[in-house]
Length: 296
View 1: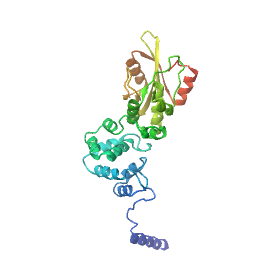
View 2: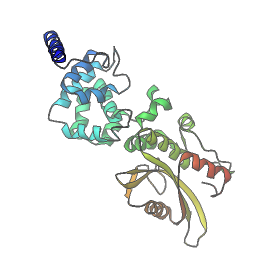
View 3: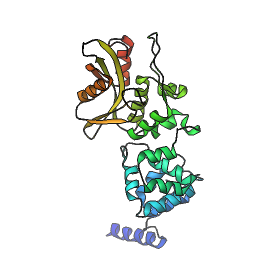
View 4: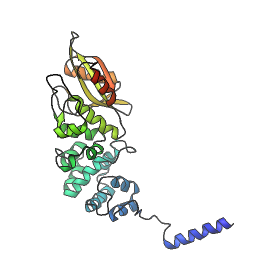
């Protein structure tokens, strides 16, 4: 009886003070715009708040967020927003990079943003918002890595912002880190693969380096080629990262089995697969160091 009376007391106090209704979480959302979004759509407020620069007391995106949220709440662009928020592993990604790209557009010109949403494709969004990925926001790997944490984003960036740089003719090749690839603006096939794998792992993907030793039809060794591969929905995909003579820089797949990827890569280059390997970056480095596969 005593516990019941205490409970009634607290209900009366909170009801009198208005605390029973949902209140802005000022300790979590640090500006009025996010708190206003939270009162109408808690999930969307959470998606917005994770974007760098949004959940700050004086966010530079406050006005853009207001307009974006009005369009999000309308009925005109539902399919576009669903696609943007559906890309990547929602539980593991640091934030939704497509939503950030859209927010950048709303900050620049809401009409341009609406035009992208009206005739939506992720390629159109990124080409309009990211362009050739130049500027200070594209210099730091720690900042870029979460932005590229889904295949669509890493494929776009590597294809449009980096260039293919052939390995050294003397055979003294060097496997670059993503920091170095950014610094020099490109690399060879395995440098691109490391770059993409590290980005996708940050988004919770099972991502690996996929190397195929390729021979011609007389069994003479031609080359080895390395791409970034990942698993999604029970299928395999791969990203080369740059437009080459035989393979493009987009996402290739789905493939039912890993050997189907090996066949596709080898046949595209004009040969047949002799061996293929699925490695973590560490495993690839170990094999590379001992040269027990020939030169990648």
